[in-house]
Image (tube, rainbow over all chains, first blue to last red; front, side, top):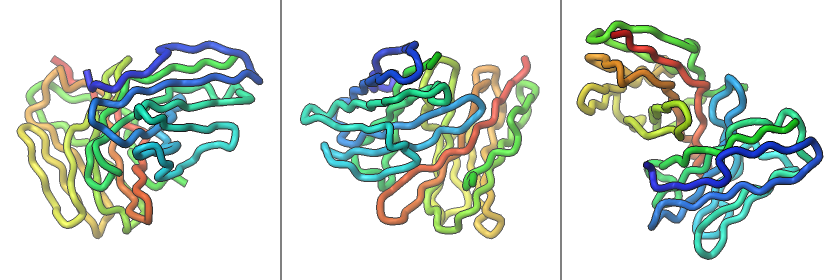
Length: 114
Length: 113
């Protein structure tokens, strides 16, 4: 158990809909990262927050947005969902901003868009 | 464009033998590399890392080698155990301004008893 929790575990929705994925980092970790893993793909970095502020942006679509709240939990919002958005979405956390900090991953949320 | 490549999607090794997982990268600015292991239905877990100023890092049965001139790193597991069966991801850190980690597509290792 990494100490990172993600909810929900599974999510099934239809195209065009909007969903919110939630992540609670390990106690004491200030950074939260979001990754997408599509079928047969590696982990694609989406976005990083550190202590409530956006720190780094990867291949995140404009239809996706994220935020980190004062209690350090984070939410990833996916809107106007398309079939291709079906994937595993992982959240990870680390103590610092990511210099040489190990990232601890949550178990992931499996999103299926029908 | 895949900046971190794991060209072998799968690998099978006999228990007790050496497992060698390979990873190639294209960006010479990457300064830190990590290996993660992932079991089904779980998130990746950190295994071992190496800074670009080193060429080897060892932790128990796991050793990572870095060849900067070839832009290649490898993970050696000796001896391999059935519990090592998992998907292994290599990742590289891009130091350009804000730190981003770029992951490979993973290699599924199966250790046969």
